[in-house]
Image (tube, rainbow, N blue to C red; front, side, top):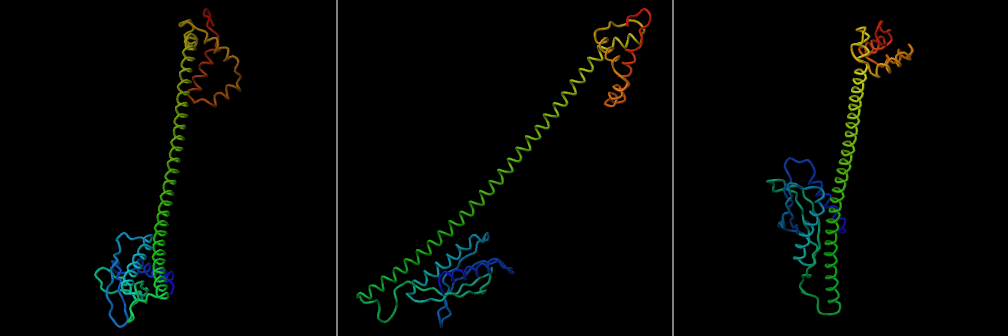
Length: 273
């Protein structure tokens, strides 16, 4: 079995053990040697953090393979068998996964080391090169996985910052829209006040005319407002009065009709019109 396929199989099995439904929490993985004809021995224990996530799985697999490779190297240049056991809290047994790992140490045997011949030196050099390449591949794979996870985290952070920037921009636009509505309301209110003040001034200028008409004599001195309103009143046709009344309240209609009626009545004898 190739190393890449074996790594994928170990990662798939560990993923199943980490994220499947179980009665108790998965606490650790136990790495045991499984030499033929022996009960084997525990090589190492790999704890599972409480906040473990799927992003950390490649690093956990690298940790298992690195510890198994170190143990195999200490046993010589032979194919060693290992068993990885998933243990829940307080448990001494659990699901198992068996795999093999070839050691990179000196080959054991009755003959000892290779003789210092050209063939022996070549074999030894090839083993050393193979061990260096294997360590280089494992180290590179670990670094690539770490960089990939870092890039994923950075992309996630950038996405969150971009979304927050969009929300802030929408909030600013909404604030500007509300400010515009407030400004428009203030302009409308100001316009209403101005029109009301102007109407009061007009009424004040026409007040002497109305009072004099009702009293039948010049009680108050009339100004230019009376003449202007009289000229306007005389020029209005019934159709214009009807259209104008449609835009006034009942109280305003009565005030307007009173003013027009007072301005059109002839002045009493002896008084100015």
